[in-house]
Each structure stands twice: as structure tokens, then as C-alpha cells.
Amino acid sequence: MSGANKQKAAVRQRKMTKKQFIATYGSLIGLIALIIIITVIRPRFLGGANIRNVLRNASINGLLAVGMTFVVLTGGIDLSVGAIMGCAGMYSAYFAQAVLGYPVIVAVLIGLAVGLAFGLFNGFCIAYLRVPAFVGTLGAMSVADGLKFLLTDAKPIPNLNEEFEFIGGGSIGPIPVPCIIMVIVLIICFVLLYKTRYGRYVFAVGGNQNAAHVSGINTKKIIFSVYILAGVLSALAGIIMTARVTSGVTSTGDGYETDAIAMVVIGGTSLAGGKGRLWGTIVGIMIMQVLSTGLDMLGVNTYYQMLVKGFVVIGAVMLDSLSSD
Image (cartoon, rainbow, N blue to C red; front, side, top):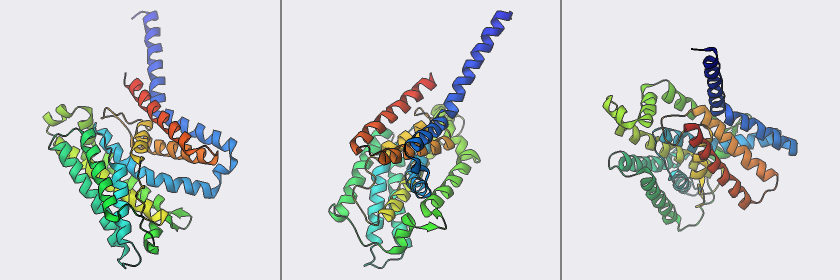
């Protein structure tokens, strides 16, 4: 190879390295820049109380995003996570009413059972009945919305017992309980995804489902399992959110599926499947939560916030498409 060709090859290599660097760390750089900008405008953003509030909210939203990460890694999508969150929260709230006197564990298990049921339904339809993920989870979203309205005729459920409310609003020392739950979930999911054969199979199914099947992987079982995980984590998020607002509200979870998808894509997980990272999802979670909190502190109208988040989602998908080229 001539000197000129070697130089051109070196330039191409440097360009590829820059592209990989941006694809890998671009979201983290964006998060740091966002924090700096908001802090300059509103210095109290970094106050202790506000940071705890950001982390508490991020933990709730993050549970949806972590479950969605597994689904997207297999090349799927789950539009029902927000509705499952709301439905599970309402059923937990019903059994957490102080007047009924049920132990808090009953309310929690009922909520998780709702999430498990929807996860089983989604997974079976998509993996074994070959229903397209978009259509199947869209149908599940409608079913979940209907069930939560049928439970109380669209009325809120107040007067929850204090033990249940502690799940969402309590703290152990300076650390909010939702943050502790989120850390435990993250540790489990990190081990599953990066330290077990199951995690390798998740990546393999998303990378090339036919090749994964030919190599002996039970692709249907893997796809089935990721929707179960997403359903259970969505239910857990709904339980925590309901406990935090101290009331079962039918609007809980509305639109949260959009935020969850945005967090996953911003974090570098490809919508085509097979490529992504869980730590990137954590960065995506923080970007969306910092953005939301910052816009609130700046007094931005809720409707404008919806516009901003919508453009963030579109921009994230565009970047995902460009990085795949």
C-alpha cells in the first residue's frame, strides 16, 4: 500500500472512531450539557431536595425503560407499558385502601400479578401467535385502559394505607425508596443481560432472529420472556407511582410509553434490535427526567413540554437511523 493510500485509510479509521465515540458517549455528553445549561439558568436545580425529586421520578419512569430495553433489543416494541402501569396501579390502590385492611403485600402482589398477566398475554400473542408487536401491544393497551376504568367507573381511589404510601413517598435515610428499588432492579437486569446466556440470546434474537433459531436458540421463548419482564416492571412502576401520589388515579401511566421508548433510543439502543446498552438507557432516563424537571422549573407550559418531548423522540429515532447507516 502506497503512502497516500495509508494516509487515506488512517483518515477513514479516525472518522469511524469519531462516529463510534459519538454513538457511544453522545447521550452522556448531552446529559452533562443539559444539566450545566439548566443549572446556569436555575442554580437551585442542583439543590438536594430537587436532586432527590429528580431521582425519585427517574426511578419510576426508569422501570418502564429498563423493561422496554429488553423488548427493543429483540427487535420488538411494547406500546402497552403505560396502560399496564396505570392498570396495575389502580388494582393495587383498590386493595391498599385503609378501610379494607389488607396487608400491603397483598396490594403489591395484586399489582404485580396484573403486570405478569399482561406480559404473558403480550408475549404469547407476539411469540407464538405471530401477532405483530405493534398491533398486539396496542390491543393490550386498550384492554388495560378498559380494565382500570371498569374497576372504579373512572373514579379515583383515595385513603390508601400508610405502609403502601411509603413505597412511593418514603425514604431510608436520605435515599428515596423508589431509588433503592430501581438500583436492585438494575443490578438484576445488568446480570441477566451481560453475565448470563439469556442475555446473549436476547442480543442474538434481535440481531438476526432466523440465524439465532438455526443456531439452536429458542427464539419464541426469548421473545415471550422479554414481554413478561416489561409487563412486571411496568406494574412495579405503577405501584410506586400510585403510592407516591397517595391515590389511585386513572390517568396514571398515560403517555408514558412514549417516554420509555425515547429513553431507550436516546440511550443508544437500536429500534432494529440486536444493538444497545443498558447503561445508555440509564443516561436516556436521566436526560428525559432532567429535561422535564428543568422545563417545569423554567415555567414552560405543559403543552410546549409535550412538543419538546415529541421532537426529542423524533430526533432520537433519526440519530438511530443515521448511526445504523
